[in-house]
Image 1 (spheres, rainbow, N blue to C red):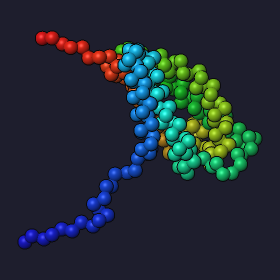
Image 2: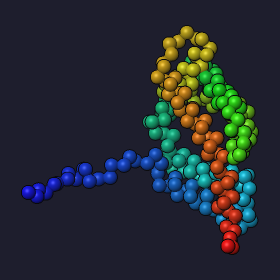
Image 3: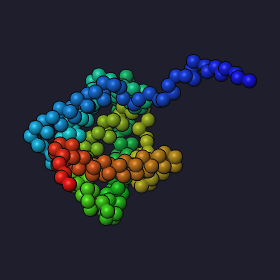
Image 4: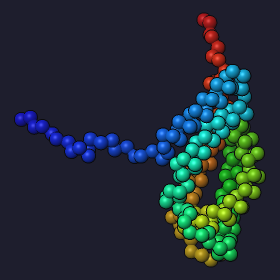
Length: 217
């Protein structure tokens, strides 16, 4: 007996989740990357520094589109309250300093792992370690004014970095173990993929810009 199976209209719809970025962001990044790739192909800018310029040429337009067109920083999911006046510095400064301590401890732990695991000092990872080494001091210094500024606008500034900071400093506040676990997990992923993704940039860029060699058998 054949029976016709009717599927509700809602079930036939594409159930894939919505993209985190708009079409405009992708198009802007692609345009910037193609423009730089064309210039690099003409002048044979195939070196590692040119590959970093490609990252900026792609990511820069995406960032600008996100901020000035999509205004993603206004999304409620950011946890930032732009409508109310920033909380007084005297109210948030202790939170910010504790958070900075947690961030710095996290970054030092990552640096220790990079130094202890010697495979990060061979092959393509050498490029990653060089770039991260150059970026370390500026990031450490810029984190101070940034955290102090953003904590005045965050709805809840006591995040995972703050949880770790207060645990290290021994402030006596109760530690939220779930937030601490989320902090460790997220930064473990960032640490692994940051080194890996930086490492593959120069080689892929060289292969893209340099004309393929014709092999004769």
